[in-house]
Length: 530
Image 1 (tube, rainbow, N blue to C red):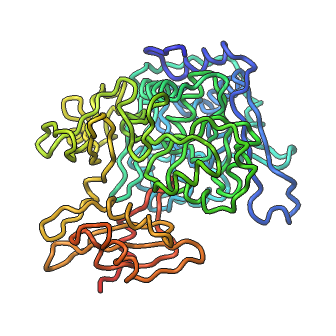
Image 2: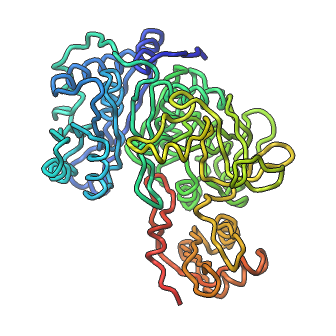
Image 3: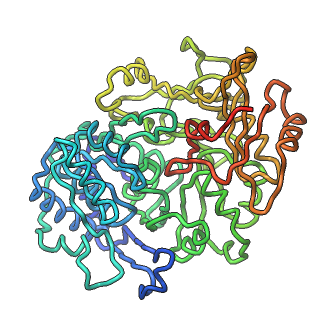
């Protein structure tokens, strides 16, 4: 793979468009929504763009954005589902020297008001279902000058989709004024426990992320990335899109994740590499078995967040799609830890240091811990190049997180004698029980082994006598049954007595972020203490 050193992301795209020309870059499919088949909608909408065609559309979009008054240094918001318009506006704004701030289309008005105001976004691009809400935000914010509704795709070739509107603008090359270390994006964290923080991503950061994943997965121009996770999230941007762009590979982009259609579409588009999280993988495993799904061409599925040994075995048996667990954060750009492509793959761990990342485990004073001892994961890097530049408008959080070029992640792990890291938990997910520290993740991993359990979240709730009470909030498998007593008894046989939950609450679903992370601050609101 060509190494892109000290270039802007815009220059990388231009170089790849010149090198690969008519080679396919993007395949997009928008499935009919439920019920549309009965409303005259015929089939799915599809769009295919070569490297050259995509770059031409980005140039047109640059002139379009310029006509709207967007300029270098401005922040603009993409409140769009997965679609070509998102891809084009993302790269066009960056080529213009502006800063993209993508958001979850399921975000509430309150959430959007905070993100738009904090980022200082001047324009928001969205679709009809969200236009009114964003227009209300614009009425309350001085910085947000306009809300632009762009139909990102259409089932009718006669409709004026966003891509068609760009034909009114020149495809003349637009030279990016930004430098490699200039800000390209503000990626707000999920906010599972508090207000989201804006991770500052530079052009160099994007390239670092793509090169790390491409190298670690052995990606080549013959590969096709299967992208079903939301584009506003770091996973789809860093791991899938960037790695494909840097290697000349292609992308099959779906408008949304569908557990029932996942392997059908993966096979149809001849995808070879995919990226997922544990939650959607469990949804896929919950589907009816289909022998045809083994006919996929996937040579690697990288994923984050633990699966049980049984789930990993069932995945391999049903799909024959090799798994590779990794660990990374929005702040780290690429994944600093990953199971090796060649050599022993221990998917009950998050693997070994990848690329040129320096990863250590430290105690509360910042001193390295011994092998086999739990510690906080810290990652050494260069801010704005190999790790995030910092948190937007939050110098205090930046100083607390990046210390002498070491990024303190807030995640705990333990390293074995062979160098593999096993993820333990978020530091904030440690429960204090009668003076003992209990990992919520450890308790969750045991409960997930119960045959009736689909997923669970373990939380600490106030307890006057023992600091915190361990509560398990459990979602059962479809048609499965279990009682609170059965779950507690199951844990007693596998956990030390002080780690066994004192209460089990059953729910139909758990509140999650867009990529399947359980939002424990919302889970706590579901619990009434006994």
